[in-house]
Image (cartoon, rainbow over all chains, first blue to last red; front, side):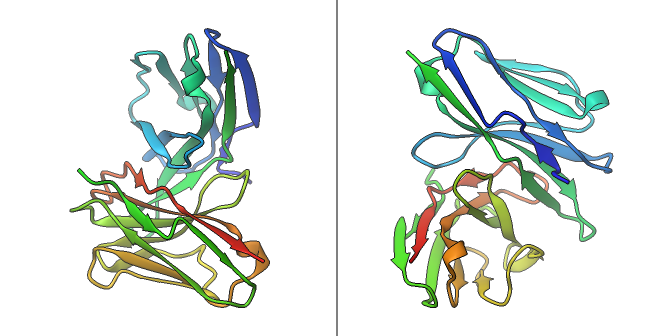
Length: 117
Length: 114
């Protein structure tokens, strides 16, 4: 079973539309971290946000917002008023504590967002 | 502040040959990660170092893949012998500590095995 599921393989929108990228995770841990990363065509993954499992407060950063709901094991990402520069592959990731005491990251398969002018 | 450096950017080899990738993390970052990213998929963790010690290598195919970080700074990932299914982008990332696990990624090495 996938630990991180990004059911949307590709999303296509027109500039200025709002778009939500879904992420559902699976873990038995009570302490864990969730992340979103952006991978533009250049290939280098860029960190966007980190949330720990005890912080369910939603966050807004400019046009980006994140909705973390432990009850549904979801950590969704919304881009408001999308722009062409938002076109990229977005990855959701989960870090769980291993038996060795370190956090081991697992990435989803990614959602490709295409924003048309 | 310099980012994570990786070389080479591209490598083409024939199956059964060997290949090595190099990574220099952000200065001062104790944790270093190697990932394999197959086209259309998310990064898959191969190995994670804390300083010069291995934290996790459960997904590293140890019959052909090896990695080292001898002085706790830069790292080398080797494949010997390569198979067709090893064609992928190999990403290196670093984070300040295990606890501060925000990862900073390099541009990756694209490997094609023919």
